[in-house]
Length: 135
Image (tube, rainbow, N blue to C red):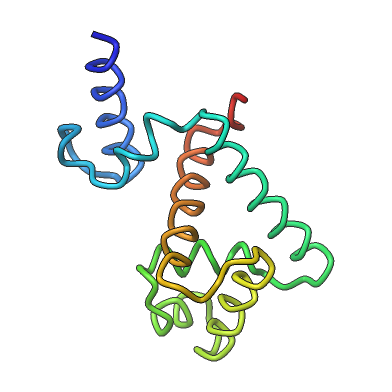
């Protein structure tokens, strides 16, 4: 029963966060990996560490890395669209995304986008819920 409740809540939250209509758990994609574990220690540690590193760098260098990353993921990794939305040159966006990876110690592998996506998705969820992770 607990699993069914968790899946139902996750599907409802996914629909809310993504501004979509009703969804079933089997249809929420990667949200099905994130939402049921939103307050697990590894997820919270990953989120807090990533957020702190980006905020520290932005504060020290006025670099807008966090803002750029969130926009870039919101644009599905499309540099040109991110540049238009942020009123920046595409090279500036590419530089900032590479800087994000450098600051976070993420290699340039395919896994890099997945890590950036997971963080951005968690950030969006926590922002919408207007709360910090519980753990």
